[in-house]
Image (cartoon, rainbow, N blue to C red; front, side, top):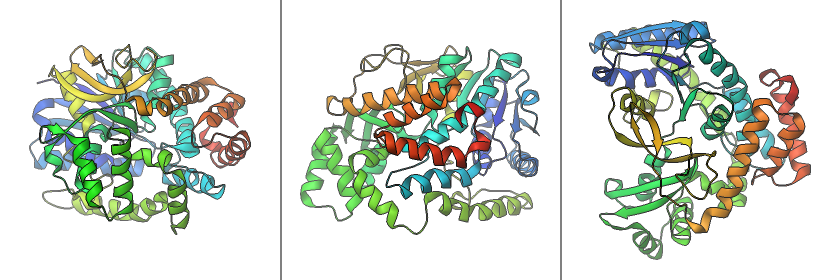
Length: 427
């Protein structure tokens, strides 16, 4: 098995213990490897490092785990770099949600004006990260988990020689989630999802070996009580393709605005309310003889599926496996430019992560995906080295913004709220 050095940028986050637990669960595939946790919060980083070491020891994992606040030191000699960070924390996400809503617009971690400012903050950090990688580990692959993963990967791919692949569980879980909501068995679903991150659609979808859309059409005809389930199923049946759940922001924009505006708290506030309990759980497990993370008490809760670890295993151990990832298109999906970062099934082995060619996105959704692809490119360019004017252009092109007065207002307020996490050229 591969013996490698991996750096985890953002290794002091609430999600980090769960990700390290996934590495430990696959320790046999990384026997003798070194994982260096890096973060700017030394206190949280120390806690995660000590907990990680204790979990590894309890399970007999042959992994060396260390921590440092020095990013360049963490990267020295690395074979792979996992980036999963959140500039400004969930407090910044709250502003990304609150400010657009106050102007009758949607803002979310990856969608709308909120997603745009998350991209600006994330790419500001990513630019320094890849500069450090170019200096001390130029042959390493950047496995990016930082949202919006498609825009971050687009910026890095366009402006750096560092190999980059962005990762998301969405293409794997969306079809099963839809099936379960519709009262179907998710284990019987087989679907190939592709397009853009958080904007993927099924090119193929079967249920029990039969086409899935007619099965969903029958469920819709029989009646579905839950409003959101009915909308999601109706969208799939109408378009003839299974959608990513994030498509609700576009095809049901007014309904989502009404729903989110009526809520007493935003998603970020809900998460912030839970953060103390996550850290309490981690501290309790640090004192336990056999530390075990409970999904409901850990940020993310995704322990059976951590696609970043699986893709790293496939790369470093030459697995020749197929995984959905976000990579430069290179002609794989005919509907996008060759240079576009797309979400598509890829062959993963020691040669890297290579998109499988021959796909088309469903004709019924090409218009929206084309607009989102153009926005993705404009946002990546503005975030990397653009001006404030270019950033406003990019924001105006976002399908959830569209009008110049709204874009200007949102940019002014969000740039002011996030000034400390943005380069001066974007103020």
